[in-house]
Image 1 (cartoon, rainbow, N blue to C red):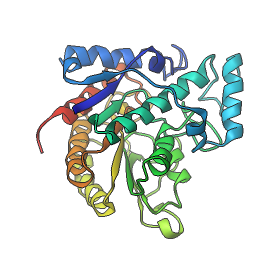
Image 2 (image 1 turned 90 degrees about the vertical axis):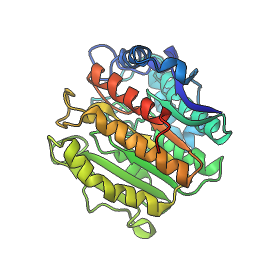
Image 3 (image 1 turned 90 degrees about the horizontal axis):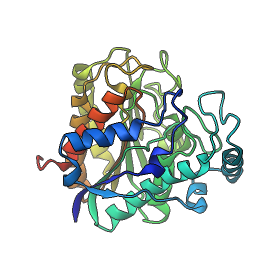
Length: 316
């Protein structure tokens, strides 16, 4: 069994909106360069991207929306939302590849081919079941959750999100689901897109109390995060998950051009390490990390490599 699978390839890098867009074409290359620089490449199992089937995508997304993405992808023109997410030629294939790589990572973990996995271009947590939003075309996180339930018969899933932006596409798509534990650290919606994720939003109906939103003030640093973390860890522990998903967006690291957070990469390393320990103890090490956001290339490279290093560590 490999300790850690990492997904890389031009098919993943193709998910970008051009050099003038914050979600540009150099994100994966920056990470892979840093992975090599830190000597981590030879320590991981590199896997090529995979395409998701349309059926797997439609397990989460509405069929009419998927058809619209496919049509706009063919022409490479138009907007999928109010302006953040422009269509580009080949968008359908690129977004399907993000989702497919996440699904393949789950398959490898469930087959015990690897213990943990990391998909850097993934964690597109703003897309809703019937719409794109915030640079996100298909919500691979939501697709993954549906796959874990439908294909692998796992009910209790924990989704942890430390991206600067609230993972609204995941949160509201599963707001009624009592078996999906969500812990979402994000910059307070009063100050940052998408403006959601208040602390009093804890789920609906039978799912009330199964979601934990932790809005952070602009300028929140490592010290404040560490103060808030124990409650999150206790929350996850009580959920007794059978699989853990981590969205580790690097836009919460100090210096990101579109957010106001001040974490160092130590926070990303810490969270990955703590969740690794919990996964080993609670769910046979089933942990999948997804890169999420991040628009400072140096931050992306260092934060994601910190996550990789933590998942490779033998520390408990």
